[in-house]
Length: 118
Picture 1 (spheres, rainbow, N blue to C red):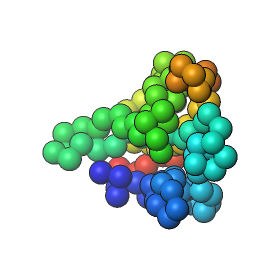
Picture 2 (picture 1 turned 60 degrees about the vertical axis):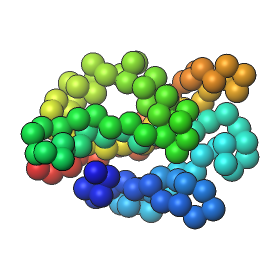
Picture 3 (picture 1 turned 180 degrees about the horizontal axis):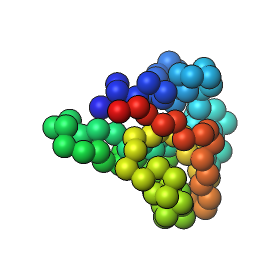
Picture 4 (picture 1 turned 45 degrees about the vertical axis):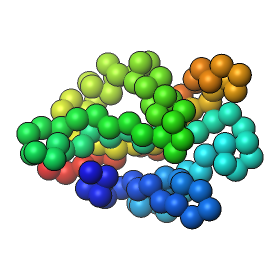
């Protein structure tokens, strides 16, 4: 499903990370880089495989990154829906969490919303 995204990809070298194909920027998890309590997540509205509409897709570099995407959606879903309506898009979300409880404390979009054609 992610192969259809012309803007963002997950890649792996020494560790899994997100790559912005438009800018070349790589988003590596702070957990892997210096052990700090942060991660990145991928958020997109992608086409269903059966061709019958779209769905929201959330994935993290680590599981906590997906939780960061959910945290972002809890705070920003109305604005995201107003801006994108039913159009396809993808973006990267950054999050920080409490290392003791694993509760996501904050989340934010770190790149623009890439609008997919079609």
